[in-house]
Image 1 (cartoon, rainbow, N blue to C red):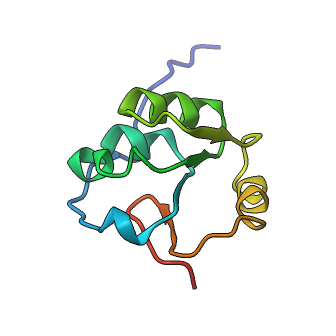
Image 2 (image 1 turned 120 degrees about the horizontal axis):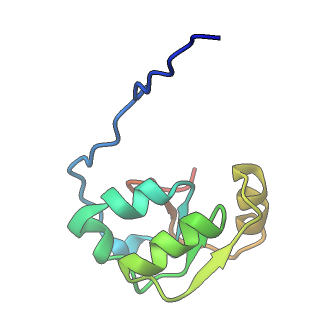
Length: 102
């Protein structure tokens, strides 16, 4: 047909500086493998916590970052929330840069 494909990135993932005290969190929830790839030195301080990954790709990236206790959802954030809901979490759950639970 004479068409020539052109590949153009729509966005770029870049790490942001962040700081949080891992002692204030019970677990980490990760919805993207990019969070593991670009979490930087701050993320390494959380590897002793259980990590709940949205799917296998995110779980694999988290393991490569140093997380050993990784629990895996089916691939969507809604189910990840369902996995976290019944947990007796006293502090907070980190999502990307950690945020306290409401």
